[in-house]
Image (cartoon, rainbow, N blue to C red; front, top):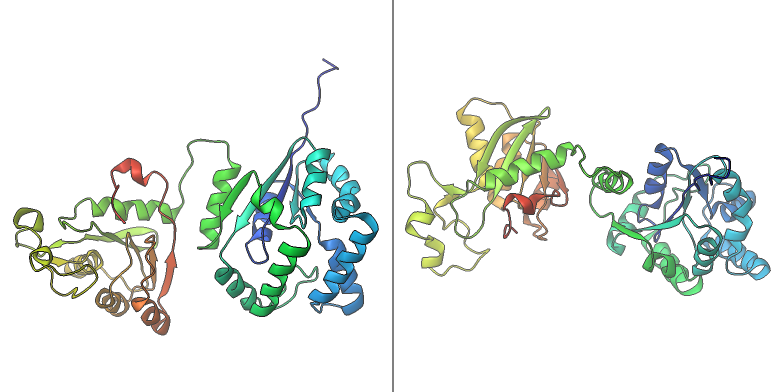
Length: 356
């Protein structure tokens, strides 16, 4: 028994361009018991000595290049090896941000149980996140950057530090373009070895919206909506003909007969929209929906957006991938929060194919 090998602890590296969400991912692993190490902290500590808590991308680059001149392109991996070994003796370790292909190769060669997770987000989303950062923390991790500074940093990291290599060849790639909770759910799915997991509230209610869509009688698109207050469903709706009228699946589509292109003259239709239906059902049964959330399988139209605002709904959650923006300005102006999430897992298994 004494010859049995001790199980090797895991070394996980989080990679991605600035603003993609690497620190959120690293903190997630810390909460799961991983030890934390930030490669770039070696450089940031030197900047801090010279400038205090003042961000200086140019000085960072100079210090990084000096270290690489002295130790090679894998300088930060070599300089942090003792720290990694010490942490690995205590448990699993997460590294926040590899900064070069050479660092990746050094770690891959040195550690058997080494995995890389790439976090990706579009430049537009990353730039917005970085501009919205308000202040610098003591370790200079959450620093604000202007759009121009981030662009320059992207080009520098890709061209000069071979940073794209680890991102491209990562063992796992996750996108982080919607809500923080949605991203954390993805990390939870990745982390857990269990095949069956308890789903989050957003997926729970969004699946109900898709289920409501199954009642739709529209020949063009099935849409569902669920109004939720205090984590309790108070009303549901789907698109279909008004109460007492014949459904389109019985007599055909009026818009098809008139050859009206999709997305135009939306008022010419026998159907009532899903979100309208849900709001009317709440009113019909005397249910107060002030301050509630509505989950929708598709984005709303401008008319329904106005109804949502006046009904007192304060949050709209959609998983449509369309980029319509007519309603977004209205929501922004009136303080209605709009969130886009990804379609819940397992939706295709419930017969929702074709619902786009």
